[in-house]
Image: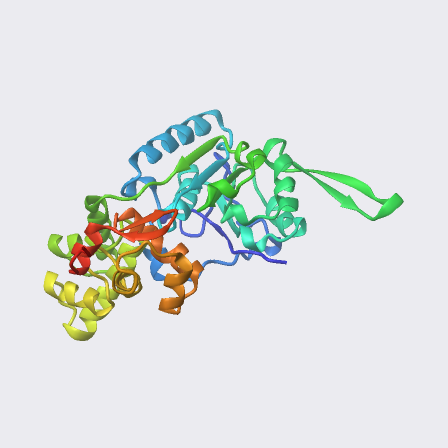
Length: 360
């Protein structure tokens, strides 16, 4: 049975003491598991850089303001927060929101992944372990099977689940009452959610891309957490090559840190940062080697297009799904590529970036 780590959000100065619900004193068993031994997430760079409070977050200000209003109102009423659905591209902070919201509510959170909930029996432990006002976070919720999704309906609306015991004429239904909780779902493909599940989320937020200034501020803040000194020019350079995505900005920062410690005695400046990013093939627009190889193939072999996806994929010896899911979205967003019924076309901006002459 697939189970994810269950851990407790707390204020930094609270140590291991956790609140079981709004206004309730902390208990020894913080996880709801027998014995109270809750598995804790392993420390890693992503966890170290992740904000712990909403006031520490950069960007998505409109989303934060709306969530603060909902949290304040729910806290004043002494009720659980309404169910929340976050959707948007990867790396924009859906999981971060799912971890800071319980911290703002002084409650616990259980974390699961939709791909691991293959049957209702996989979901039951999470639902039976929820405490008053706690949060259940399901990442990639669009991957939850239909049978498990239907199990969530009554849990979300009536805080109860129906368990069928036995088979045939001897079968009976056991109604289990659940403590009121908040379900937070995150998805990169909101269109794959069924309408009945989507409509049961009282709050739905779409996360958008980050600006250059916001990414620069994220880089500067995370540099402080990593105990490294980054000037504004270096932060702006990393931000420019991060595709408007905080996760990529953090990855670039961690790589530059490794590069400077190995090649420059830990000294950061704009030139060293540029050399570090050039070494892994990240150019001024944030394109990597595969992105440029795609554009080069389209321009050199197919004269800029139109060309079909399968033809490009076979020429590059790469899966078509890889190109469609990983390469093309950023090229389309950067206005370097156009999709038409006849195939893919390189734009004048792409020729300019690749330093190639436009075909006559």
